[in-house]
View 1 (cartoon, helix red, strand yellow):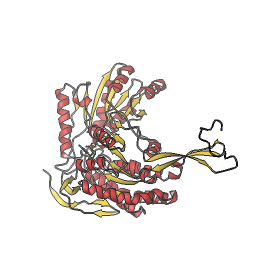
View 2 (cartoon, protein in one colour):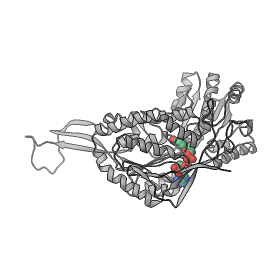
View 3 (tube, protein in one colour):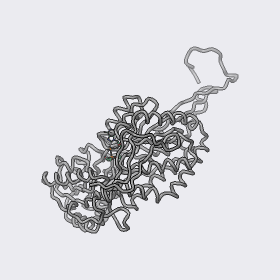
View 4 (cartoon, protein in one colour):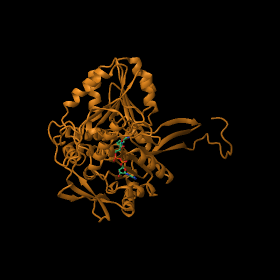
Length: 503
Ligand code: NAD
């Protein structure tokens, strides 16, 4: 039963200031480690979204024309503020999401690195020039901002995922409307304050809170040119279809079922460390979590022994507690869902090696805790294999050969990340070429690209053409223009209705 202590009511952020317009609907924010209600978040209706878009549109023109130097100055200042206030951001993440403090600080760091990438906007926005494409004629390309763009983000990275989008969109000269997850919305308001303090003009960044109603209003609003979405696959598919129908550019990143293939020649201590870290970090609530271990040949017995040893040593506790390895899940509803998957795994005939429902957890009463869970003898057709559990549930599938393991990865509808553990360079290279996923790790379980590369999956893990941040992010938030230029000179030949026959 949720308790209420010292709650606060959040506000939207429109036109560079808090907007406390009373909402017809709102949601409760719970502290994941205790289940206590820590606040309420207003849910925007279409009229409020329209107001945020109007403020963004009014600001977008000037911001789009601001010199590169002026935009870079704001981003550099924002980077410094994020660095200074990283503890505060991490504390908000720990309270509302539940991940442990070190993990929350890591999330802020990843976001900060995207800001650093965006600070190089002068380089990123350079066009190309071809001199003398015809007599006295040059041709060159420009990339221009889209205007107002929007981001809709999930609960599991309340700082990093908005940061995948916002710094690059702003660097490219757009105004941005963010609809963060209603489950952990507070960090987005601190980000808004920091952007204002950094000198971002009013209206260039807005936050509208809400649920499905706010999302639908964003998808249909004619003043929004592009939508970046990150969340579960069914919603990603819906967002892609709906926003595309409304004529918008869309990138919609969805869910995942990331496989880690362990070959018999792998360093098994390294592989066991990696599977436990990537399976249970953030209580499995990462889109790049390893949720399937594919054990090839005779690797199962020695690897499982190592996994058990490491799992037994994990400390599951309130994320603020020093020494905690893994915190609670984000909500009571999600905890029920994950417990349901464990039950279905048993019913479907998988072997439950470690039951997280029984592990003692050192958390507050009412917190959304479940311990690390390990299943063996899992096969496609079982819900714990087929569906994204998004909890600390690692499933093991056994296969006789590399080829059979690869076929499993290929047949899976998701394609976010895939990893291989081996000391065989040839096998690793074959996997790198053949694995059907957008991000591949070789002896690296969570192969998240750095900010200067782009992040994105294949198949049902991404709808749209361009990945986020890195070079794809710059392409996504700009549109191309090619100028063909001649300055009149003595070679001008007067009126000529034909295509030039020669240069
Ligand atoms: P979610 O799909 O429930 O919510 C994401 C966003 O969509 C939120 O802002 C939410 O308010 C909104 N939303 C929810 N239901 C909606 C609906 N029916 N119509 C319109 N909008 C709706 O996802 P979540 O539970 O917040 O996040 C976890 C999911 O996100 C997992 O599936 C995870 O794999 C995925 N994820 C993917 C990536 C990636 O890069 N591919 C990264 C992070 C998270």
